[in-house]
Image (tube, rainbow, N blue to C red; front, top):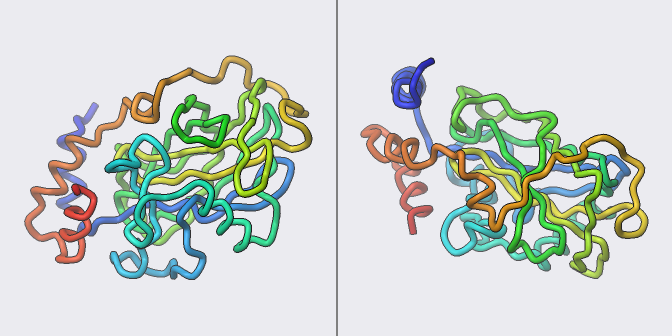
Length: 253
């Protein structure tokens, strides 16, 4: 099997690199509703890959928000309350309605090469974004170590809600809220607020028993990430476009 080093070397030799990203631009629950990730700006164009304006609302899990809800270039650290209010104002709908044992179906917009899969997902039950539990990904985004040749492409990303899931958060005036966080090995992704359909703990889905692994924080949930090595290769690439260099530096602070 090819090593991560050889894969990255081959990738960079064959494809021009700009600092890419993947953004969760839409989400629906198995019981209805609509949403997107915190920090998403619906007015951001999805037809290009350069930093400005195409990457400004993409979440990266770095800095003080690395273990919680991440940050964007445009808005800084994401905020659960304000971000959820913005989502509901944009969709003019309820949050994605999920059931225990159901799914949340997301649209992952891969802006550039380092927004690829595979993505890992986790859930927070109280809306506080401090404790996360890993959950299964039913449909993933193609890629290896967060890299692929795809650009400006939408992919389905489906996360499974555990059969015994409870959502107890109160966010933006909404009860029974959970947060679903998905990220790739290079720490791009997003956090989607969802709402348990009906009363907390009620659900019609089946299966999915024993699909979760408790973790203390999001770093542990994504501990299989290959970020350090991948990041070194991004930093060493000598012919990265100027805006991409600035973007890498932005995320290092």
